[in-house]
Amino acid sequence: MCCGCGACVQRCPQSCIAMHEDENGFLYPRVDTDVCVNCGLCEQVCPVLNVGEEQEPHNCFAAIHPDEKVRLSSSSGGVFSLLARRVIQDGGVVFGARFDDRWAVVHDYADTLEGIDAFRGSKYVQSVMGDSYLHAKQFLEQGKKVLFSGTPCQIAGLKRFLSKDFPNLITVEIACHGVPSPKVWRGYLDGKARGRNISQVNFRDKSTGWRNYSVVIGDCAKPHDDDDYMASYLANYNLRPSCFVCPSKNGKSGADFLIADFWGVEAVNGVKHDDKGISALLVYSSRGRSFLEHCGIDMTAIDVESVVRHNPCIRGCTSRPADYELFWKRYNKCPGWTLKRYGTLSMEKVIIRAKRLISRLVKR
Image (tube, rainbow, N blue to C red; front, side, top):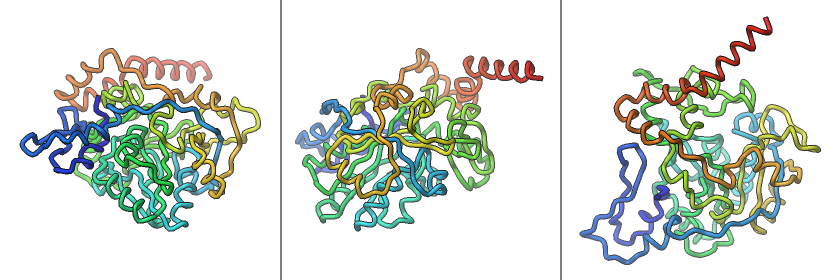
């Protein structure tokens, strides 16, 4: 059930809890019982043991960044960059997920406009939280404005860790399909690198369009449904077990905002769209609505159901594959073959490719 947010580790006054990878590469807390004093503070901050109440958004908008360059370098409409810029301009600090020098994903903070560039774009790997909650609390207590972005469970973990409301805190959750295993990501990268340094990673390259985005690793680009890692992720195989029973969705994280891809926008009247990306921005608090007025976002009010209809992970969990355990049993014996077998060579993918081939032949 553990979501791996690490709130317990950062809250423990004895520093007797540490995160350790299990055989599938997911981090779980381990307690040194010789040092533990049974204070119970770790349980008090756990978002799985203390589930919040569901909330409906106050408002919902279709939104884009006015700078096309920023929008094209973002996964959807570039809205996060505008929210983050406002906080930086107010002398605040922004927390988000970035790649480290080995392309692992970690949570970090920035206090410059240049610094937030690293947080832009989706990273389909569970980020390591480190001491992010502790740093955020320190900045908040200093009176600095803090924007904290992350998955629903990470936002819920932060809220439980802080244990009180800070008026200078803005929280932004992403619409989360689930978090893949860092172990699978490392193995996939190793196969791509083959002893060479990887120069870039982009999970959502828009050179081929927002809807038909590509995965770029180094100098290699593939359509997202032809990439082994992305395909197995979208098929839910390499996800953390807790993602199938997420305790923090549907407004339960307590976030001020939720940002999602506005899939299905073409079916909504009155919303301008192209194939360069557009965000859906759900506002869950009056604080968020007030903050939004000073961010300079090009927005159009929309019905939240038009967003959820095509992005169900806003409210619900992804489905656990029937052969999920078999995937991991096979992966831990033969990683490369298993990732391909359950990704781009899955029966569903084979059928899709066959239909594409038939369609091309018919057109000829």
